[in-house]
Length: 116
Ligand code: AMP
Ligand code: ZN
Image (cartoon, rainbow, N blue to C red; front, side, top):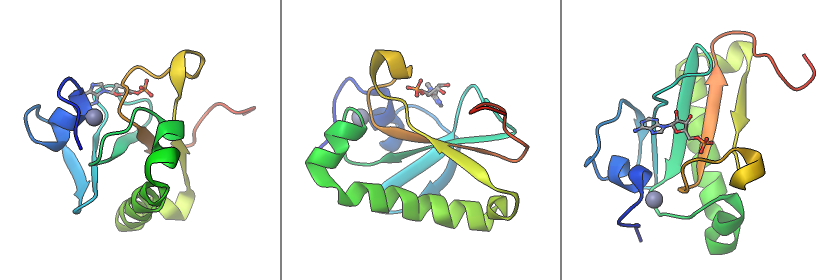
């Protein structure tokens, strides 16, 4: 079920343009508009949830759907060879700005942060 005012639901439906990097029946992935790394993609489930805690209570299988997509993209683009990072922000302290659950995939260069 999709949310009428959600920009990522509109992206999934093609009502707002995006640069697609992956799609199957359950998951859509696209380039982040403001990349924080050489490669920065967003992975969303086609079924709307607000954040990761909402997602896991709604249907925990969505996590596997999303990480399966991440596995395929990272192998196809050879990001698995040097590594990558997956991040999800939740709520105000987490810095979440779009309230359709999404996983950031960052890679293509050495990443800073987390003590580095
Ligand atoms: P977050 O701050 O974790 O909620 O991440 C939201 C992300 O969505 C940010 O990295 C934005 O750059 C990105 N974003 C917002 N609108 C769009 C859009 N129309 N197309 C692609 N990325 C977007
Ligand atoms: Zn949505």
